[in-house]
Image (cartoon, rainbow, N blue to C red; front, top):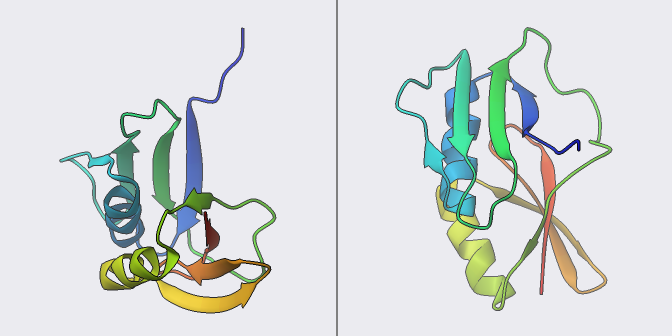
Length: 110
């Protein structure tokens, strides 16, 4: 059997992006995380863990894979995520598209 162990993010500062996603998803940021490498243990929902690694090149285009987050109250969730460091990108078809602190897009819908 094969399963997804972790999802890896390339980033300029692994610690900044890992802190955001730990807060956004309710995961645990590993205490040994640094700006070079960071790890977030999956929250109780049992999904894959998140791994963040520093790479020298910046993000250059739209991601071809992204998270879709479910929220009962989209405006409240948008505000919470912005407090964590996300930015609003656009709204379309009943969902909003946001960006994490390094510009990686993700959706919030209900």
